[in-house]
Image 1 (tube, rainbow, N blue to C red):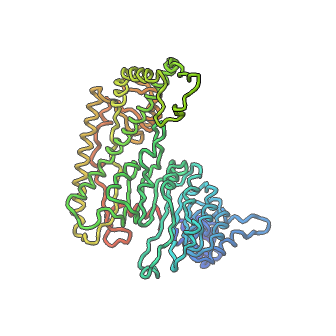
Image 2 (image 1 turned 135 degrees about the vertical axis):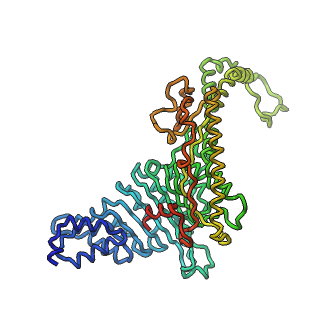
Image 3 (image 1 turned 60 degrees about the vertical axis):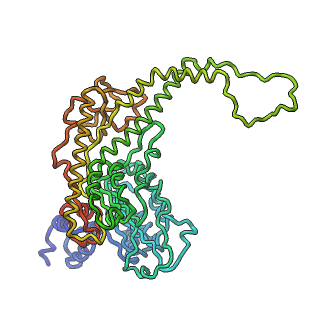
Length: 548
């Protein structure tokens, strides 16, 4: 015993750091009891705290409020990771405890049907956590008896999303929002005869508002969003018409690298929509989603692989439509402004004055006909049409010459589950079919990029690309340089996030090695792991991030 007590505290500190988070608290507590005189740092006991019973939350709150004489209790500043893993813990006690933790970096909350209300989370997230890196909200709203209180009160957690959207730009890379599905282990699952409460009432546009907020755009890298059966793709990927501002600038979205939409209502045709929205996505998890369910049909996985490979072409075409529409609108506004400066509108004759005298009784004072245009308006319209005819060709050429270089696919892993009728013996054939479709899509992408290279060399088109695909980000879309086809100043907002490609830069148009665009890893193991996971699949990446 004396030998262990004489060891330096730095050695115990290094040993304690090797303990996993889930065993951190109990292991250190057991170590202090076994070696009461050893210089085990007490600070490590508070770094990672798990609350698994309601009484533990009360005990922790009392411990943090204790004072040693006149000195302030420093234990609250030691807590960095707090995991509330109980469905019945008192919400007020949890809120009072969290307010005593100024250096909190990871927070996990289990939200049951009777402890947390939307007002609690709204109060909790009213003020931002400066050092928060990891936030996990797990909901289980299910009740055993019919209760319409939530519906009548409108007690939904939509305000939580809006509260997070009001945070200033931060450094939180991991966000998890999960609603547990109803499974057979729940006591009421077999005799359920009423509708269960909802966690979120209106995901659209609240989810898009949160994701496009400054708090998420610059920092969020991993997002787990599991709402069983809810169609979430529209909430994540708004239509282009709703995303574009009046000047044609598209709002920014987080540079996600991992997205988990398991149990959500994601359809087959929405997979490439997700990949087009989040261009930096590397790992996509769609376990228990209704994509390619039912009997295995020939060619469906080949089509899926081809669409995943050509997602950059789809993204480029959608942005080209936005650019074209915005440039036409801006060019027309500039032309009308120029006509007004030239005095065209001032040449309109004055309106016709009403005749004086007695009006007959048979003359009606109202009319169902549309009012006739003022004199000279037709002439002004003719002038505008005549003036625009000369500039129409040049304006169309400027619009038509701008082409977007489709980026390379970034997807590395794709995890999903198939129908129970598809046996594990068919998985190798599915992977082979997916690889064939991926290879076909990569070949089409190479041909498209080569065609744009020839257009740039022949002076037919001006090629631009997304800035995240460029090796350097110093070139602006409105920079100088006649050879690169610089656009006028009014189009600078339209080209936000884009930069011009030098037509002599052969490397920009070429395709990289096969290892850079290798086929994504397919995994069909699912969350339960009924079959073996594919080596290096997205489940292993997600497990290292979510820590549960």
